[in-house]
Length: 458
Image 1 (cartoon, rainbow, N blue to C red):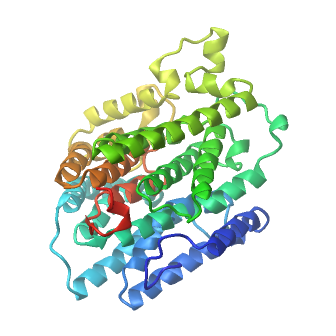
Image 2 (cartoon, one colour):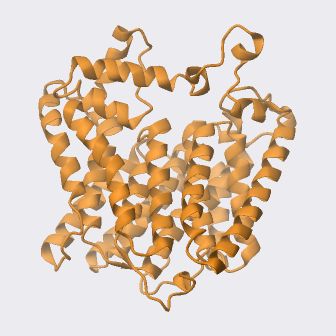
Image 3 (cartoon, rainbow, N blue to C red):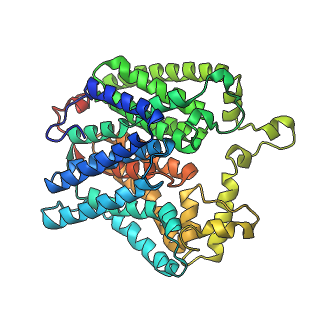
């Protein structure tokens, strides 16, 4: 944790070097990522002890990146679901802090509504309680609701908000280094029309693509509002290029497509603030689009046109003619998963099948036993009517909150983070903290001072 008392505008270069060295060290020493988690937990406790909640939120922001990094590096003594355990730990500390000191009136009650909608189904599901199932499937949405209870009472200056987003980006540096060092020579990789294990650090490409997409969104947003991670401009564009390059190489489309859609949502708002910002946004779009197209072409050449075929939804079966290209093949069977979730919901409409139980029931509906990949349909199948209500809340609340913002530039920030959070939950459920953290940060009450450099053009 770097910023305890003040909010420096940029990440000091020597800290960036340290993060890069940690990433390199984690390739050869598995315990590096474990030590980083230990440092985050110690700093969280320190922030609690000195009554400075910023330290807790810094840890929350970093948790998605460090969670994926520690999984990639197979960090010893670190549970696979450390991210969810950490958020639960922070929630307990926030509850104590908000109870014993003055707290602002909540600006919304959506967090409590989410939690209350889940309670009936969770009580009924105690009859088939499975701790591992609950952690993997239910903890994410429960923690989202509880964190929103506390975020509604926060009041952050723009400087604090940008610093928190910078902390969220920091783990991307060691992740990029780890991926670079772990990936074999590209000539030795047989690129096929599926997610690539070798270019994902020998780990799940969907999670790696998702976290790189999150870094791409946050880095781009901060660059556009002139609060980038680095003081040296070209380093920020280099970081964007590397995140996109490594994300495309995973061949997992969800994280990159979701990131591009989220960035587009921000640009659509920013383009119409005023003429000067429109011109600046237009130039930024042209620059970023040109950079993106250039990188895509280079990666496509590197993979002998396999990348383009992958993004066109082709598979080995569709190319050979043994399969037809359908929405199901394009989505890697996620549509069938969603359909079986719907069938399970119809048979368990009131309270759902219980957290994680959809996996065990799926074979009864003509599909293999596999966990849900889409959070919205998982909520239906495993939480019943309560899950349906939570789904509606998650979709409707972002429109309410974005509309509530007075400044277009903040509408852009909120809409982008909401879009990334929800779209991530469509292809990756809540396998990581990404959806929870991005949704909560999108809903954070922030006040902007006109003299702030981040809003000087509004």
